[in-house]
Image (tube, rainbow, N blue to C red; front, side):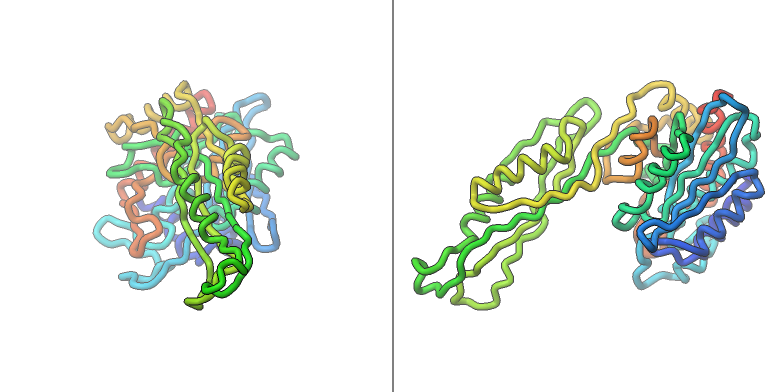
Amino acid sequence: MGNNSDVANLAEALIACESVTPARGPVFDTLEAMLAPLGFEVHRFIAGDEVENCLAIRRGPPGSRHFAFAGHLDVVPPGEGWSSGPFAPERRGGLLYGRGAVDMKSAVAAMVAAMADVPPDAGTVSFIITGDEEGEAIHGTRALIDLIRQRGELPDLCLVGEPTSVHRLGDMAKIGRRGSVNVWLEVEGREGHVAYPHLADNPLPRLVAMLAELDALVLDEGTEWFQPSNLEITDIAVGNSATNVIPSRARARLSIRFNELHTGAALGARVAAVAARHGGTARPVISGESYFTSPGPFADSVVAAVEAETGIRPELSTSGGTSDARFLKDLCPVIEFGLPNATMHKRDEAASLDDLDALVRIYRRIALAALGG
């Protein structure tokens, strides 16, 4: 285990399972068949009626450190126009093609391959794997965290295998991500004929004024590690097909990506206050809070492992969208590192076979360092 062909075989087996989010069944059967021979106790359960999750643990000596790998086996829909079947993995020109080759079945395969060369007496290792990262993320990692807390088996450190590299393997690792909150806005009015505006109440001018005030907000100027928070208007809807009718209602939606200076609840309340000033209402839904793992020994070990295997010193970044690290940070310090992300969510998604081999070695070094080896 741990050579190029072995990790590619593992990745192919996972890719061959059609696991569009929410995932369950065969892809978890395949993962369990990989982990059980390595001495892992595999606990699988269904949450929310359709999402499968897996917590696998191989315990080390009493009192040893506990390191966790985390990731997901669900994938986004493949779409059309692939050169080969999205769930029929194929190797061509040094690349492994298939949906999930980058995001992130190959990383899970590399984690498994890495564990074949980490002795059980090195410490406790767990796999926190969900089938609901690409979807609503309600019944996935959050449910796994509840189980971990119930069992009292909290890890000391956690690595998420999201595809963080940009131009080549090793050029970026994530030590934080911004939080995300979406807000649905609504202004009620009274419909009527446009020729008799005094008999109606047009909600659109109030919605426009509300959005103008929100769009003008400067939430912050950024921090040492985070870019400025941003608020973006993502939808405006009236549904008025007539040219001579003042509508009775107007709606809009906005999305805020925010750094550690804010919480989702505080931002939702701030938007609601603006909405109320213009006679409207706001319904915020928080996708996740921001997280940040301060540079220190854990980040140093990740940098050292990447540099040893690739010759590249990764940039420590907080850029990009959200990941399940936004939940896992409540358990322990968490860092994300994985493959180059150029083809994730695209047709003909593909990962370099050489990168897969290097990723196995990197993950093995990170695990051993985290366990104190």
